View 1 (cartoon, rainbow, N blue to C red):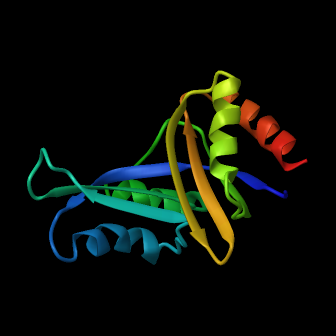
View 2 (view 1 turned 120 degrees about the horizontal axis):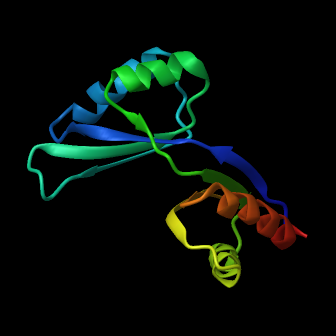
Length: 141
C-alpha cells in the first residue's frame, strides 16, 4: 500500500464561539493566501463564548505572519500528514506500529473521502516523528 507522508505544522488559537466567529478568525489567514490542509474548530465548554481552532497547511512567511497577527500560534510539536488508500484496518495498523515502537501520539485526526484517508499525527518530539516516517515506509512495503 502506498503512503504519502509529509511534515506539517500545526497552528491553533482561540476564536469567538458565535455565528461567524470561525470565519472572522480565519479570514486574515485566508486573505494572506492560505489553503488549509485541515481545520478543526470546537467550543470550549469551560469558557462560554469561546472556541478553539486548529489548522495546518500554511505556506511561507506571509501566511505565518498573518496567522500570528490574527492571534494564532504555531504549535511546538512535530506533525505528519499521511494520505493513503482507505482500507479496513489501515489506521489501526498505523497506531499499533507506533505503539510497538514506543511512540506516544500526542494527537490523531483521520478523515476519508473517495476511497482515500488523510491522517494527521502529532508527536511530542521530532525524533518520534522521524521514526514514524520510517515506520510508515515499512507499512507501505
